[in-house]
Length: 253
Image (cartoon, rainbow, N blue to C red):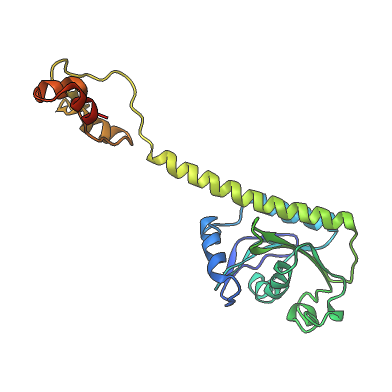
């Protein structure tokens, strides 16, 4: 369990809170983005700190949701991260159902959250603002939120900035996904370079161990190329002299 103090940044923490809404689709997406296996990263930490600064609030967090897990990706100003996550997911679920930033100016006046343990005890949250982390198709993956212990109002500019930061979170997730995919493909690539000692007669190639191999075997072992065998017109005429020119042309297409 993480126990960050006020002003410190919490790293990734996961708890089980079953939810069925788009669960399978969200799970597939989070696995594709490798969120479930990742750790807190500096970029996300910087974003939550910036969100707290812009709204001038003491608490900010990135929360993500899938079928059986709620994740506190990173947070600032949080004490008792697991307890915080267990109760904050209700705010996150509501945020994901909204197309824009959700603002709760005074939580005790909102029946959805008035009895939430984060409101009635603990940090006694009175203000909440959250921007949904959403895919282009509208699938919600979580929220970027800020909180305060006193009722607050935020203007249009602050809400726009919070929405922009949420888009930065999604862009960062996407960049990491693409980067990881490219790195995985690069690991698979083998390049042929330099001089290849090839027999002028049979066209076999001598490998690094000094052994002679058929050219297709050598290329397949040292690259991603695959072979499909056929016959050129010259060889077709040599090995099948009874074939007409038209038959040879049709056979070697």
